Length: 362
Image (cartoon, rainbow, N blue to C red; front, side):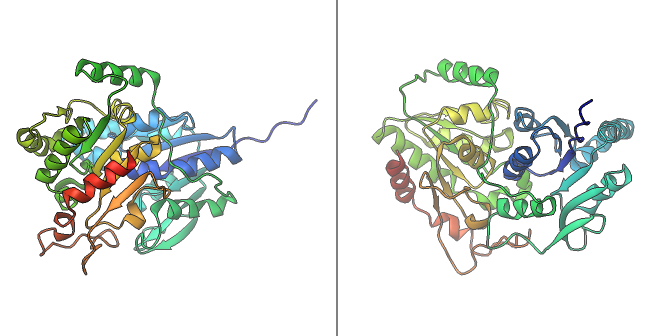
């Protein structure tokens, strides 16, 4: 009788943050799967990013309900929140995970992992919040190197090295078809030059997102030049919270764009971005989607360091534009101070610089 095959480990990845942070974990997942092909990987995320995780074939199960999501449910109804929390606990506990990689920087996630019996708990000790982890790296903030590099450091506790550090995003065939049909309905054909414009900064920054916004009028000006000089068709992309920004751009532009802001969800957005020849964007999740999909980008960075949160890995297909002043980058150790310079670092990036960078990439 052949010897029993050793049980493959079950991993729980915990990351309750936005699109970019979730994509930053994909090299970690790939490395685990390469080392342990038969391993089971669960992913505990927020509700909003579920579509981009559910399409990843290396992830076996997604638990899409973060502490922030639960808080909103409790505000709607105590019983709805309680039922959702109990259901989440049961769903995660019944999988009997062996190892968790906790990227949350919040001790409550690792405490939960300990309570339900996950014996190996690996993560970052930020402000003493790693006290329930069994192996940890002390952290004051992400500085000097990309977040992906920080995330990959946790693999040393598993004796795993990452040979491929690129981001991964898989688009289901159904989403590809829907995106093609949507674009065709707006008159976009296969041979058209399509440039996506993302004038927001994603939902994860909430009320502070405006600190990452290159001025809407400048987006309108450069998009008009793309349409007039490059004969491009322009897509304005973003979520419903950014509709006021897109309204300004559409109103000002002489060559009217296709405004998809708030009209497509995260299940379709990656497929639409994949159909673009170029994405011009602020620092935010759609930029990282484009990088993962192999779509060229021109991104404008203000308070946030491009070395830490920019396109990864570095490539000539991705141009970052910035205007360095003495206080930039001011977002450090997860803190954003008030700006007394009226976002000079963003406003000083010119329309000409963005247009020239895009034209060179195309």
